[in-house]
Amino acid sequence: MTSLEPSAREQEPSASLAKQEEKHALVLSGGGARAAYQIGALRHIAKTIPEYRPQILTGVSAGAINAVYLASSQKSWQEAVAGLSDLWLSIETNQVYHTDVGNILKRALVWGLRIISGGRLGRADVHGMVDNSPLRAFLGAHLPLEGQRISGIAENIEAGLLDSLAIITTSYGSGRSQAWIESKNQDAWTGSQLRARVAELTLDHVMASSALPIFFPAVRLNEAWHGDGGIRLTAPLSPALHLGATRILAVSPRATPVNALPQDLRAVYPSPAQIVGTMMNAVFLDLLDYDAIQMNRINRLVEKVPVEKRDTFRQVEVMVLRPRVDLGVLAREHEIALPRSFRFFERGLDDRSEPSSDALSMVMFEPEYLSLLIRLGEQDAAARHDEIESFIRGGICALPPV
Image (tube, rainbow, N blue to C red; front, side, top):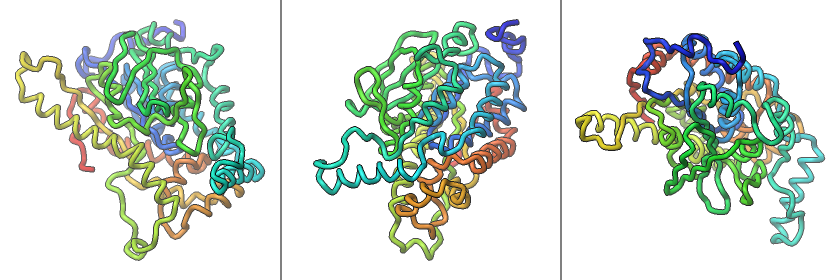
């Protein structure tokens, strides 16, 4: 049997799974280094519910890396998840962006000169606060590339193991979200804030989707500059919905409810890092929760409408997995693992008296921290195993309040 051929289990899905006509989608949101949490949750599901294999994958930001790796793997789903886990456990911060003193100092000086001189001084061709060329090299070595194309995606679609993959970016020129899709259905959609474009996905698409604004440089795609896909994506579940999903499992690295600061720190003026972290959570992660809640409410309304009168409306059940603990707190506890040069400049923007650092948690790609996030994801999924299994097999998930 070749690597493209589905296994006997995949050829004949278990009758205990949800209805055969249903299409399962896996939505992987952003969050930088926090996306390692997604791997742990998927690892538990792959081990305990081996017949689960989503037909639709969507990825935003760091979630795009995970989605592309899984969609391009021509191994079994369990082997693909295990390989993605090994990938995350092998990475270090200096393999994502340059952390040496010279590189960081040069960029800090360039940006500082441009600001204080009103743009008259400093090189205009220095894009991003850090140089993330190491990430491009790392992904290029671990993703199956044929020239510019990421191979395996079209092959898995042809083999019937995958329906669609969507990678989301933000066009800085138009200010709109862009979904780059490979799908067996070549019809693209156009929405008020989200455009779809059929494309052969490349490493550039992945780099663009994961380009944290300001921090990582934007990427040129089709004569326009694109950055992190979460910036303008007001409905994170909509790509999966447009691609025909009837059941969506979303994995977010955002804990909820969010623990408030201790009383003695609430009167302290927030550091720049705390402000940036709050903004990143609002832009990249919080919208997923609200989108899931709205979809859940619509489902309950659709239930009350007779089938013959539903027209184009359909029920799309959603389940969101998320950490039970604040990953920003864990990042603060593991800050010492960061390269000394980066830690020096980071402290200029941070206040170490703050117990949590959301901004730090997104850029800290250290093995000990990433390993912890993967273990947490696995433990959290295990704690909700019965609920996850019920959902995958056709049950309804009661969404927690935001």
